[in-house]
Amino acid sequence: MSDSIVPIAFPISQRMQSFIELRDAMRTLNQSMHNHSAYAWLVAAKEVSDMLLGEGNKKPVTPNILSLFHTMGKHFKGLADKHPDFKDNLLQAAAGLDEHADSIRDALPKASAFLQSDAWLTAYADAMRKQDPIGHKLTLPQSIQHVWLGAEQHAQALYQLVEPIIQALEHLNQMLHAHVPWEHRVAKEGSDQITLHAQDDIGLLIVGVPKEVLAQGILPSCSGFRSIIRLRFTQWQAGKPAQELNQDQAYTLMMVPIS
Picture 1 (cartoon, rainbow, N blue to C red):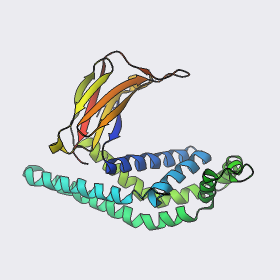
Picture 2 (cartoon, rainbow, N blue to C red):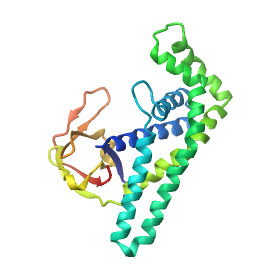
Picture 3 (spheres, rainbow, N blue to C red):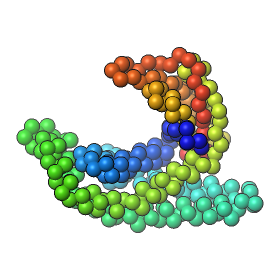
Picture 4 (cartoon, helix red, strand yellow):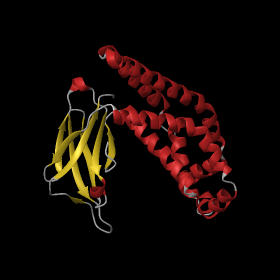
């Protein structure tokens, strides 16, 4: 993929949605730590905690993630049978996926124990559930930056525990983006319709948008489900409502046949 293209993923299966949400939460956690943004780290850590442990009626996303690794590995093994010339490379790719899935299983118990017992995350969760004007809700924004800057090992400890999970997610993300060709398309007057065939079992749409287009605040959005997906480009400008694009917009599309 060209460096001038930004991939934006739209999951159309529950497993892919779990993967994309956890991948992005982990990226935010990593970025906030390296930017020394304590409160942003707290928000991201809570989101990661909710997804790994489950929150309320939500179930942990880990089974979906591990199932996706298994399906992707099975897909590569199937390709190896069909393409003997690339069999060794494809089987090696499948073995790599198995190793990363094992690393998630190994990392999860200690990461979960940290997330369940951490006082900051507990306080933040309580603050989000309660409307207490003199409790944690006011205490956290005023204090966490000073405490966190004085003891960055707090964030580092969590990062070390989830780093194998981050590496596994990024490895799978790279494979999802690499083994399917891009299709060049044009959204006429800012919109396009994508038809999916049941036999393809598509689970992820990746829309490639030129960087200079994104710099103008022009972004894609999708609606629909399974067989018909409608793509629409809108422009977001500072201080203005979103506005539908009424001009043709070139983009690239990747349809990943893993659901």
